[in-house]
Image 1 (cartoon, each protein chain N blue to C red):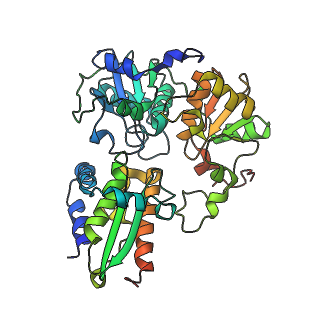
Image 2: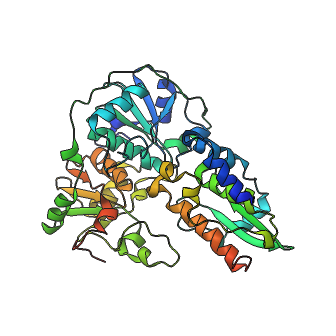
Image 3: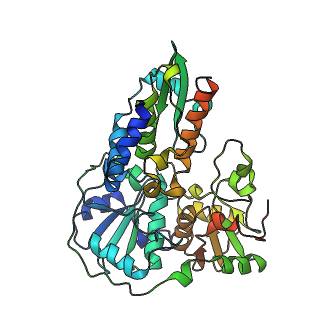
Length: 141
Length: 281
């Protein structure tokens, strides 16, 4: 089963009350970037303007593999968690094996009710941006 | 702090450090990020989530009073507890929770000036331990909805009467420009712009870089001189869903002592969707 589907299944099989804890676990797993990469990322074109927190993101290819680099402040564990899920599922994945990110990722993870429509704006913008950048790379039709 | 009209509603990080084990005090963290409390919080602090705890899950409203009583009783907050709110993003959500507690007439509400950011920048301890306080018999004594909350009918009359409104969203939201950005997932409003006569003062202008509130004199300059809001007039504050405007409501009501400020929590998500609602751009 593709990795993102596996993670979605993991969330769906987790009791609703513990799904946020699982998201917190993911947020702690997002790798810390070396300083020179952080400096490179902190440019306007990598920022997600819709997000309340300063989130910087870069999606590119390396030897036919997808690479994702993201910097999210520790004060935003929810956003870190979502990016970490996408990172775990898609980073270093062979382009030809890439799976599409569902646009309603939060709902599929069963987190939409807890996070709520009013605060999911930034998160949806991130999902949208990563999907869009992957499509720009021509990896997925 | 001393020049504010009601300095008694603000406490410092020092005060919280000294009183965190005081049984008459309950410290409440309220954040934009739903997981932030779990990553670490001030010792002996309880979490109140503005959405999952304070809002009715079915109807767009706050909890019915008896549900609020149940929530507070379960958290160990008594009717006479001093409740100190703090949170992320310049106490944005802390002020929102403060306002919501005031709706139910909770008397002793305080804000920790500088919020989470100041506590952390001072190198003070955080813990992941969740305290469990004994249950109380919380009773709502008085509902303050009429004096601090505005509903759309009132806002329509207010704008027709050319009374003061303050829109605390970003200048781009105020001008309506944001609704036209490409690739921008919309926030559920069909029209962009602002309520006629509203002055635009983005909410975060009221705070300094360290997260604490600006001085009384600076706030007077922003709201009285800049936005021409007079102390004695009826003022309605709004934003997108009433959260950022709760922060401005707090500043106007307590720091500047304006007695007649209401928060319109329907805000732009209601106004920008309402048929025939007047809009300016």
